[in-house]
Image (tube, rainbow, N blue to C red; front, side, top):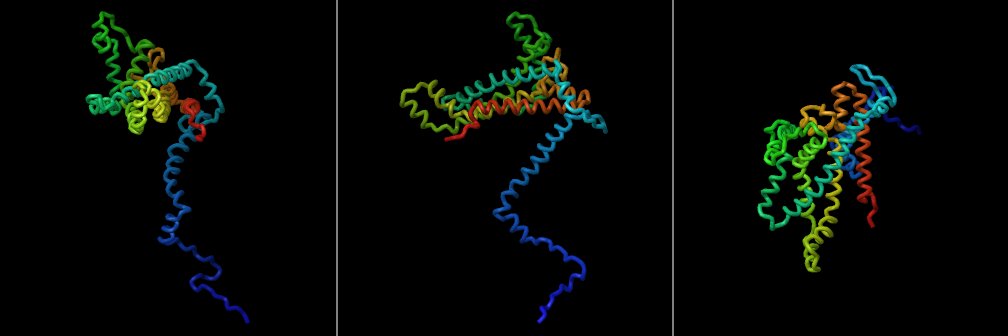
Length: 320
């Protein structure tokens, strides 16, 4: 007996059947599935990472091997990187490294000590000091740079020269000299970021169990011994974080220098940084390919430096 053949009357003969669109319940089951839910939750991050980080970095790497002119791009191989071997870029690297080291020297121990003092219940007016120390971080760096340029001005009436006059010292051209110019940069960085780093350390101090200090006090430990053997080791994760962001901030500094010297052309390039050199080549001289090479060198330099310091602090060590 022959098997009956069922045919779909709605599908014309000789044409493939139309694909059914997923219904709302099918979408709901797909999204709420235990297999697909993790991918759905991380998808916004992956998209934003690919769009705002991976794509610009890849484009910059490609551009660093090109000569970019309006409407014309020419592959030039390693020529942009060979052109980086010049004394001006060397001075920019030296200035950025020196600025980073000096900011690390002042912007890690000083906020730590101030945070410990302001965390003490015996400190009078500590709530007021916490607020006042954080106000500079809310101030625009453009405004702050302009004010500091006036403070360190070469006129007799500038604040710093007025202070020198009190002690009978002749007025000084602060921003025309490399040493005093860097002093102005470090003072500006200290004024702006001291409160931020202090806030990080204060949040870390809140997580130290008070029982540790009570046990140390019972054992007869001094305040300095408690600070050295309890506070500093317990704040190690905060210190590593502050160290990492300070290295990044130091090597990428540009606006402070630009505002302090009212432009990107300080006397004898005493305020020229790596980002300032990138800005000069990429935007002021319209050499985007060469500027991209400067950016890639800065990226690699910052990455390697941070990996070294993380290795030094034992962040890659496996816990027992």
